[in-house]
Image (cartoon, rainbow, N blue to C red):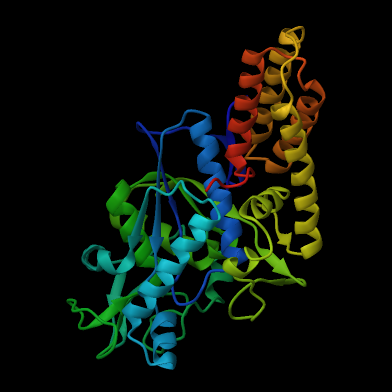
Length: 406
C-alpha cells in the first residue's frame, strides 16, 4: 500500500510523492510571547511523527519551521512587562526550543526567525503592488482579496461568506476582507520600507520564509486547523498572485484542535497547560503515546484520565518488551516464527501509517507485537532476538513512545 495523505486543499486522500530529491515541508511555528502549551505540543508532535515515518519509509525530508518573533502580541506583552520586545521574544524562543527537546521533537532541520526575513517580505510586498494585487493606504499595505478569485479554496468558503469575514478592523481598507501585508508604525518594533517605517503582516512572514527556502512551490505545509482561515488561505493568495504558479503547496496537512472542558486550549481563554508543567507530571513518552491515541486530524479532548490510561498502556508495553529482552536465550527452535512475527507486524504497522498516518492503529500493532515478544521470551536464537528487538524499536521510535535516553 502506497502512502496516502488527506490533503486539506483537495479534501481527499492522495498518494504522497515528491517533485525533487526530497520532500520539502514547512510547519507554522510559535509566536514567541509566552510559553507554549499542550495544544502546540499536539501539532509539533504530530509533524515530528510524520517526519519520522517519512524517513522510516525512505523519503528524504527537509523540514523547516518558522519562529514568529515579529507580531503585535509580542509588542503588547513587552509593553505590559516594560521589556524590550526582541529580548522578550528571544527568551520565549529559547524556552520553546527547550520544550521541543524535552518532548523528543528532533526532526526539524531549520528554524527561521521572521525578523531575519524582513527584506524578503518587503520584496514580495513590492511585487504584489506592482502586479496590482495590493495597495497602499495611510495605515499600511493591503492585499486586495477580490483580485484573487480562488480565495476561499482551502477553507471551502464562498465569496459571499468571505465578504462577511472582517479579517482586520481598519477604516482605510478598500474591502472588509482585505488583509495587511505591511502596517505603518512610527515607533516601537519597526523597519524602514518603501511605505514608511512599520512591520509586516503575519501572513507574509510565512510566505517569505518558506519561499526563500523552497522556491515558488513546494511539497507539504502543515499546521493546526485553526490556521486554515485566514492564515493559510492568505499565504496561498499571496504566493500564487506573486508568482502565477499553482498550487503554491501540493499537500496541506492540518492537526485537530486540543480541547479542555469543551473549549479550545489557548492562551486567550486562560485554559492552557504549559508543556513544561505537563512534563512535571508525565514523561515525554507518555505524552507522545497519549497524543498518538487519536488521529492527528481529529479534535481531541485533553484529560488526566486519558493520559493516565496512556501511561498504563505504555507500562504494559514496556514490561512485555523488558520480559523479552531480559530473558536469556535458551534455544533456537522458534527462528521461523520469529521471522514471521516481525514481518507480520511490520506490514500491519506500515498499513496503518500509510493510511494518512493512523497512529491509533499503529499503537495497537505495537502493543500486540510487544505482547507476542513477551510470550516468545528465550525461545528464539540470539540473532532472531536482536532482529526482533531492533524491528520493534524502529517502529516504536517513529511514534517516539520509548523513554528518552539520557
